Amino acid sequence: MFPIIEKKVLNSQVTLYRFAAPFIAKKVQPGQFVMLRIDEKGERIPLTVADFDREAGSITLIVQAVGFTTKKLATMEVGDAVADLVGPLGCPTEFGTPKKAIVIGGGVGCAIAYPQAKALAAMGVDTTVIAGFRNRDIVILEEEMRAVANHYYVTTDDGSYGEKGLVTDVLNRLCEKDTYDLVIAIGPIMMMKFVAKATESFGIRTIVSLNPIMIDGTGMCGGCRVKVGGEVKFACVDGPDFDGHAVDFDELARRGAFYRVEEAHACRLEEKQHG
Ligand SMILES: Cc1cc2nc3c(=O)[nH]c(=O)nc-3n(C[C@H](O)[C@H](O)[C@H](O)COP(=O)(O)OP(=O)(O)OC[C@H]3O[C@@H](n4cnc5c(N)ncnc54)[C@H](O)[C@@H]3O)c2cc1C
Ligand code: FES
Image (cartoon, rainbow, N blue to C red; front, side, top):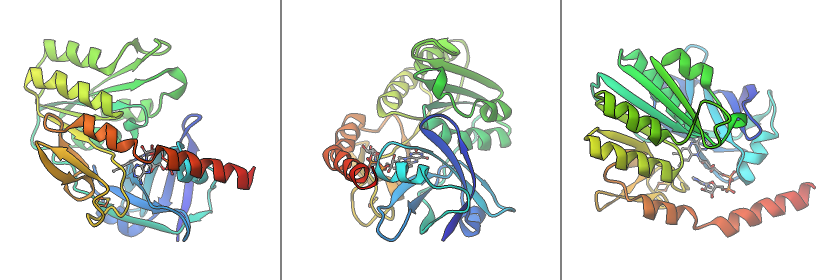
């Protein structure tokens, strides 16, 4: 069992959980994820390790409550424990040796982008973070990002905080003025698609972190297959990071919608059973 040792609500949908998980904390690298199962009957869901403390033996997960399992997790408190946390899974991010990098997070994607920004800053890379949200109420991790990044920009779709507009507006402006050799983008599929389009025109290496449906997380089921450079890859073992210029984002979006009906059904059943 893996107990929750800290819980912090970041906004109405997103919660930070710190779990005691010493073996994972010892090995995990930025870019890797775990498979979480709440109890023996539960489904396994993939979640990125947003932070870790090797000495304390803890890992941090930042989770948006979107459906059955993530909403159930949100009802758990410090002292409660989940049955399984399996990991670290996936390949660590291959940063290379950039001099100037931009890390882009969209919504809860900022949770996955945070360890990347932190790692780049620790490598001495000049790191700019661009964080995009729909509105002011759902801005997360601003303080944490500002603490590690050399420059921080925030955009909101409705202009209620930071700059009104999209992360790509800031990205294009920065790339027109300066030279960057790495962009990392993590967030909604369409955001990553348009970031990759923009950076392609500037010739900047671009890493995206993909989040297809994962079932086992170990390369056995084929559920997480994605097309990259015309080849089939399994995001759980070949990724989740990939070259943003080679990913077939449209196929990724189509596959992500496969289980919409079943997911809605699971939520309705849970609501009926527990009021
Ligand atoms: C490598 C990876 C890392 C992720 N990291 C994070 C993270 O750090 N924080 C976070 O909030 N979310 C993260 N996600 C997404 C998270 O796994 C889903 O939100 C979660 O599985 C939803 O489960 P649910 O039962 O609550 O919702 P459901 O109602 O079952 O599904 C809601 C939506 O979540 C997605 N989803 C559902 N099941 C899965 C699954 N088994 N695998 C992947 N996606 C699924 C689908 O897009 C679906 O439409 C990550 C996904 C991947 C693949
Ligand atoms: S989740 Fe099964 S192969 Fe990747």
